[in-house]
Length: 308
Image (cartoon, rainbow, N blue to C red; front, side, top):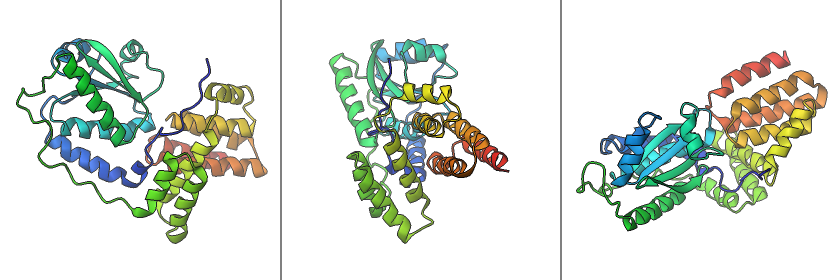
């Protein structure tokens, strides 16, 4: 069955402006986290670290993969909150590429997927890289559900603090981005574009604004698209520039940057004139969105080879 791509709220755009600060806050929180609050789980350790442990403390399972762009935005948020909550839940991280049977057991359809386990039973939470405020709301609700089930333990003992005495200070948000973030949350792509463009007009070298504008364009192009049908159409007609660009956008939204880049580099090789320029420009915009994803350097080399 085909499924429309979930554009709204799929990625927290504010992460584009504060990714480094968020990671720094996560690192600081991790330094003070109780031992065992954040763990990597394999199929071999899953029974003890997740099932058995969930009898006394809720376990939040983060199902991710190294190639997944949204996972890279969500994981630092989960880690920081796990540290902040002071052992009231365990964050179990599972690389679904390496541990495919765990992913299959949770019936994972897309990543990131976050599921809790309480008294050995799965409790679905959410999919996608949600903003921190929404993630916090899910965790608070999980703790209520766990308490109703009698699961109220903490990592490090019952006297572990529920939260640090003082939360790390949030870095100040560039006020110029607020209008853009609000417009994206409302799905108003034109207003979001205008807000980012205003920053770029005043500061042409602002990388966060360029990336934000490129991501808004990506959302607008894929809003309401049927991902399975779009990718099937592009695969059936590999030289169709319009179909190929839409399929690449869908792969990008899903975090499969390597597939998106390979598709567009291939189109650059097989096209000329205005079509080639359109594909090249499209690819460069996706590079802005992908940032430091490992697939970018290889794709840049492939683009250069295709052009020259």
